[in-house]
Image (cartoon, rainbow, N blue to C red):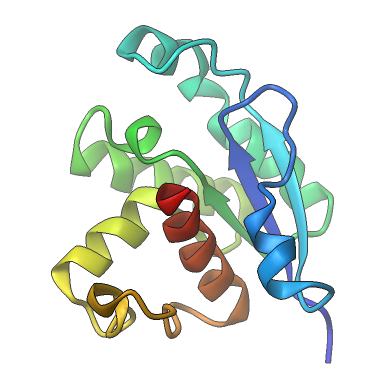
Length: 146
């Protein structure tokens, strides 16, 4: 079986993979990240970096990832649900890969969608769209939990 390779677009410039993914999955999933260089958590900060999200997704595709997740709930949701959906669609169109955002994981969990049946009890997320998407959803939720 091929090791899933998940691409993460993260707010800090350094582009480091958040520690939760490798801690939870060890060698079962390979993670790669690209940083946006978010200077501040504000509308101004988001506006400074949001136009580079699709470019970062393409760079991750070029590295060989099988799915991409944009980390940072406020970053993908500061303009509302339609903007979040637009980001997801633009990343998917540019890469040809399954793409999601941390906001999608949170909204799905709060709605009690089938993919997140145990979230409210604090248990692990089940499955979103396969192993790579599952990792994105779990990583997004764990990143919020700290």
